[in-house]
Length: 111
Image 1: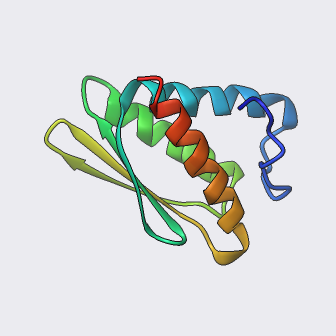
Image 2 (image 1 turned 45 degrees about the vertical axis):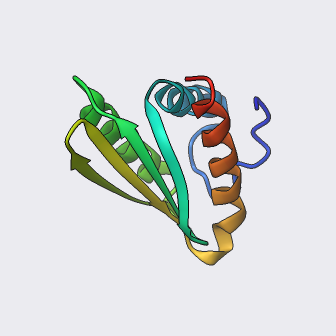
């Protein structure tokens, strides 16, 4: 899924940096995704396998993503050998969450 047409205009990350950021997320999901669910229309729930540096990696990505795409709300929770990541959006960005869910599922299948 190299096409970035789903990235909304409200994203302030420079266009040339977007493929690199998407690749970081894809790599995280491909390496660590253990479960994905959609408990609510506007919320995506991801369970990521823990390990050395995983929490820091997730928090770093979340912080950088929040800086350019303020419509996302990220919540991380820690469990035993697990990092939970909830991603929420407002109704105007539901399609972005749909695209992210599809991309995450595809990346997670590579695991």
